[in-house]
Image 1 (tube, rainbow, N blue to C red):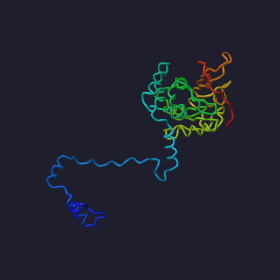
Image 2: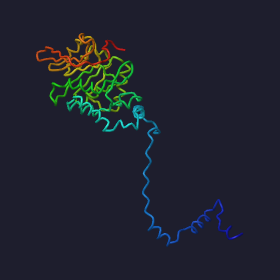
Image 3: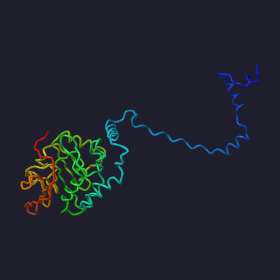
Image 4: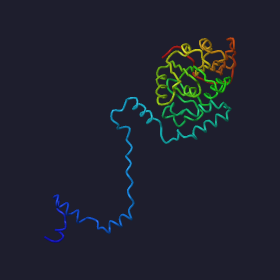
Length: 293
């Protein structure tokens, strides 16, 4: 047997053979000293993050929230502070001044409330379809109507507000940023359910969604300091006026016989119970309907 053959280890090695090979391959003391000087101690490895999709036995509600997060478009900068600030800058340029309104709209992620395919338009000043022939209102219209709603209230007032027409839930959450309580009623069950899904994971302890006929208002929580409607008809339902608190204000679109279109109507309940009506600019909302569907 040659010297090379003697030096080559044979596999599989016996335990005594492995020990002998380890001794032959051991680093000489001098090399150990030089290695200790040249080499830095290795940093401990941090554990790899767990993939939320492979966690066993996850609760169903957590899985649903994860599914919602996955559906929100990534890479479009929609969570960027600058995206919303540009929207607020446009609103301020158009005359929105109330800091409560601007702060509330800054706090609510509008892209969560629109369909994924339209999310890149979420912070543009445009209405977008949300299904069943309904739309999410333009940010400028939302801001204008809420500013009218709270214009006569003290800056520190904690209002109880009724919203007629929940839609996707966006305006309801904006109102909830400064109101003591918001009750939002929707007559279309798929939209009522969609608003619940959109609001999942977002803080809204003071917001209650109701499935019912918006023309009837919601008497169990009346009276309201403010009532705001996202649909317009030929008249203002009497139930809304009855559920308006003294000193409260109602803002809604309504058909105007003179112009043939819709205008914003503001109704104030004065001390003593009398009502004062004021007409504002032209708007265009979906028709106000009765019943549920």
